[in-house]
Length: 172
Image (tube, rainbow, N blue to C red; front, side, top):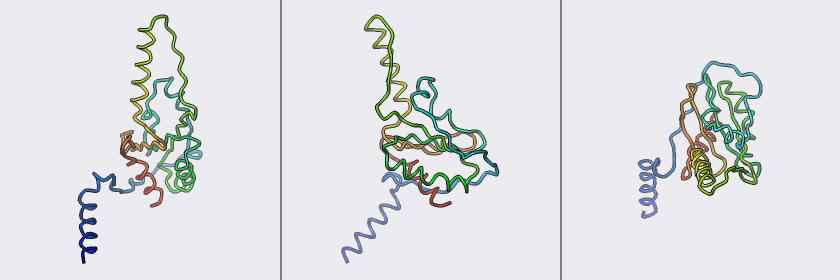
């Protein structure tokens, strides 16, 4: 009897507090009637985006859903998600995937300056730019709608977009 009560309480807590527990609701985005040329996947190097001062949101495509996936070659979850992309994209012509490769050996910066203050200022600027990308681990997923508006994104504390993408791919 006690086990049954504990199970009932657990179910009630999960149903009432699932957002606080890291669960996100899922409803597959409506299909937009567009067709896509090519595979629907484009690859980018994070270092190039960073050097050009382009945020990940700049990769969102107008008129289709865009999944931006930050990945490492050594990330097993990234490889598992990537393996499902071809079948998913075959069913969803209205989706475009932008894969952003993070450098395995870290970022490389070159600072030019003669005094300690200017070097510190440049280091602070680079640090702020890195933090503006708001990623802490891979995979890092951001999903944008057809109007280039952010639908869901991973944060340092929650992998909401990764979970959403996995459920979306499984539902197709």
